Length: 363
Image (cartoon, rainbow, N blue to C red):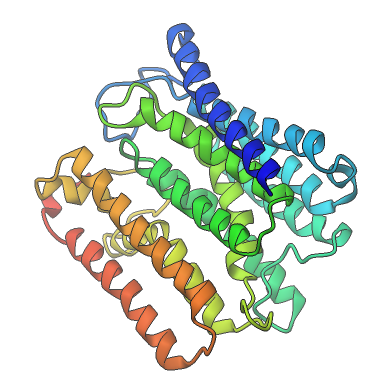
């Protein structure tokens, strides 16, 4: 145990330093990659265009984590587990599509097609693994596959939409991944491939936040948001959707749904609010705009840094609740489910109400 702790401590610190270094280098040498053509509309909160290169450090750190697992633990597992191979292919595809979008403004249909392909890869990879790669909510596997498809595509788009203000997406993704790490730690599953790659991406996000905190010097770009969206969607399936009871290993459908609502509370609240408001205004939910929950908090007078701290606080509270759900609540009931749902509904209501204020300022 002491050896594993030492290895992970050195590994974590090394990735944080690597992320700081590579992002600093990219900032110095960035010219046009990630900065779209000036004549094309760019829907961002910041009025200043900055290099959108943060996703490169996420992806490289992910690959370093993969290689490190093979070096320190089990090299054979990298090639014998279908889910590992599926995650590698799907995350690489998501990253490359995002990188292309940062550089060339790819067509929305192509972006959607690649997202569906990423979901398909994750679903198909389960055929070559001992664990399920689809959400296990229904008795019918076809319905589970359809739900998994919607989940992956939805989260990839939700994380992309949430990347509209300094630090917001990095904080949100960071806490979701930290919750998964804590679950693995509770289970003492330190030699799991997922543990080391999630730890690597968490470290890279911390290094990235140094440049992305307001006022930011760098954006993560679509390469970052698409990669993170794919990764946390996959993590969500395995550790939150399919999270069994800590005591008896039982799947409880209402507990699965509550767990997802708590862990992914910010992406769900923001995306749902935006979709509802745009449909009411008879606008497309898929067109960018300055009408997110973050924007409306700004219209109310909060600074960008204060908004980031608000999101950090909600994320931390959700982390505490998620740990309680997983480790300490063994006798599940609909009364308990209702109580936790009221927490989600309370956060959603507050954030949604903010979007009904200062409507004249949004675009």
